[in-house]
Length: 350
Ligand SMILES: *Cc1c(COP(=O)(O)O)cnc(C)c1O
Image (cartoon, rainbow, N blue to C red; front, side):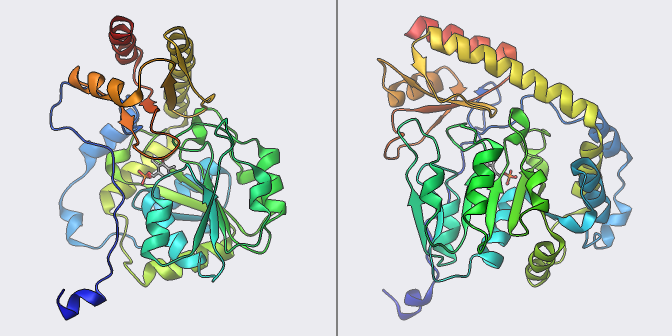
């Protein structure tokens, strides 16, 4: 090893789901929305001209922040926007998780959390989900340097009720508690109502799933004004211009089109509930997902085998070769037609 190699920050990176080059696949592997963004987004895109791009964008992304604040029923000073919620979450880890005590998160959860913790040298302790893949609130009563979990959890889809979140918060008032609500629009109740009671709470949301804009990279945090200021200070110390002009303009349109948002999320919920029935008939079991995916295991056929057979057919789902979950597949909810193709193949194969 060369001397300079000893001083390199070596990381084991997060592995995103595959984005196949082929376009003829049924893509149920990265929890994208099968419907296009709001038609208002396409309309606004047609109005965009190149000339303003010579200037820097608004560092505060004020137009987007105001649209989100309106939709969330909070003031703009309570919103922090970033390049997808991954960017927002990474900033949160950097800003708020600076204790010698370990931060706590579930053993089965969004696989970016341990990557950020490792990269930023934040100690952490993973708390095991119970046998039904549920978060055990009492595991979060111990001393810690912060708490983070998704609700609904990923990749299980299991939802915690607001009482449980309140319970976890009430036992963790001296640290920052982050609730990652990437999937909350598909069935759960947002915990933003608890912001008035807990000044240490941060709720993170994204445009990638329920607003069909994964490719535009827009995410945000909602918290008290003080926490948002701390977060902004760190962001401005890195890169003042995280949000580009196009993302600001198109994100604003998406945020304001409440009717379209309602329509598409209801469609996905209906398709998911039907998928639960169909997959049960086919011999699958799964936690009762409130997200836009199902985390399924088959009584007879191993997940790894099914994963390969589906891929062969051009049906992409997600498989995690990790302890406890290596016999499960995470299947994103697509359109009714895409799901029907999946069921047809499974009926035949099984
Ligand atoms: C998809 C996802 C995110 C982040 O997505 P972005 O596209 O970066 O907004 C964050 N947390 C969880 C649990 C997710 O599944």
